[in-house]
Length: 326
Length: 260
Ligand SMILES: Cc1cc2nc3c(=O)[nH]c(=O)nc-3n(C[C@H](O)[C@H](O)[C@H](O)COP(=O)(O)OP(=O)(O)OC[C@H]3O[C@@H](n4cnc5c(N)ncnc54)[C@H](O)[C@@H]3O)c2cc1C
Ligand SMILES: Nc1ncnc2c1ncn2[C@@H]1O[C@H](COP(=O)(O)O)[C@@H](O)[C@H]1O
Image (cartoon, rainbow over all chains, first blue to last red; front, side, top):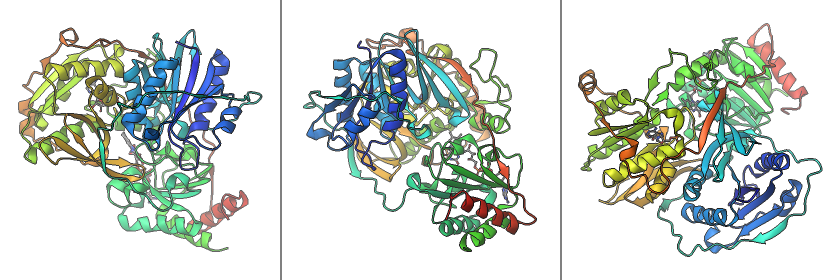
């Protein structure tokens, strides 16, 4: 096994950069610097324009490229095959993957191919006496679990980049060498056939700067209008907790949390939401959280910057009025 | 089998979730042990396929210290055969669990469909189904909200993705994971539950399974669990009326330049 840690990405990402790559490089750089490991970044498929610049900022030694027409678009079987062949050639000690929707499928499949241990939802990483220690989120964020990977085999770690911050390391810059890595994808074919692609148009909660979210404290479906109206008055987007979606008060694309969207707005207003960790993982990265709840002890206030203790059915109409008055 | 995540959550919400003396277990005895909710939905998926006319035998298997209770629940729901693979849960990880499950599927002579939950609601790892699929050499389709046989050997799956629904087709055998959007599992009648209590799951010793080259060695050990303290710094906005509080909040947010 070589003494390297490699960050793997395979998509250009909506913003032109693979989702979560800088957050993952932040963790990878810290680990590599403290444990004396070489840091590499593997881009499977088309590379983002800024790849070299980003790699340099995080002290990446090699920007590894796998170029193959089969990797032009994400195809799980092809992607897993490419990463598995790369892992066998390079034998990195640690493979880090920013945890996107597709990565949740790719990471454990890669681990099975290479016989590696696998841990998802990672928040921190350490190397201690040869063992990799990973702190991961569990119980939807209620607890943290520390996992140890001690075996001789490499390990694959999914990094919960959505919950981390990207920090350019000081004095760690490098001039990465680009390496073309060749793999044979001749035999790789997709077994799962896409009949209808997912298609999303319009603004995304994940990218919204202002979000107003409603919970069960709204009492009934009709009152969800208040959430939509306040969102509109603030130029933001409406969101909801899971039970609100399950009750059909709001569309499932509006759900925030562990099994919904992970958001990073400047402002998140939570009205009639208790503050369960499964919801809060979807908004705790917000710069400012405002909570409106009639229970002064509600957990949501522990996350909030500003709180109003009161009936959201009374407060929301007033907020709409105040937001509209300029 | 998992600890009831809602009960865990209620303790956490109240700031009263405790970690046991071993530094890693949740030991509050009032937290019930249940079948992972996504796994109940995976069983529901199998039952709906059968209701739709697919002739099949539904096997339910669980790796755990003593999964008798949840397997009896599976029988009450409508499972045909139930099997327990007894292990000390502290000594297995996702890799070992998947290897044991793969061995079990091989011992049946294969399966036409392998249905799993999208993730276990304790660890939230969501790795066993993909590991299992790879070990069996089967295609894997994750996060399904609907599963339908469109021919004797082709299954159509609607996946819940961040961009909305995606519809895919795959030839059986395949591994599919079920998400909460699948809908509520059926609730067995009291009568069925009573009858199921008499069922003894088949006990399958790991040593009797063909585990392939790698065996079922765990690679990952859980060494610690803790509750991350949340440092609250909430400023409560007071106001003589909802209108006054709302006005004050909006002024603050404007002063912070959070809103225009
Ligand atoms: C595996 C798993 C995954 C999950 N994933 C998600 C997820 O992705 N997203 C998610 O949101 N949840 C998720 N949950 C559910 C989560 O645990 C909570 O149950 C849920 O977030 C609670 O929603 P809520 O706050 O709207 O409702 P409740 O918990 O019922 O809270 C309602 C709140 O409103 C307050 N209230 C009532 N009336 C009023 C009023 N008139 N004015 C003001 N306040 C009022 C109450 O004091 C209370 O705090 C998940 C759970 C599990 C087990
Ligand atoms: N011990 C086990 N016994 C049977 N199935 C399991 C076990 N652990 C995980 N699974 C299956 O794999 C899914 C994902 O689990 P996990 O990877 O642990 O999050 C679960 O929903 C189950 O369907």
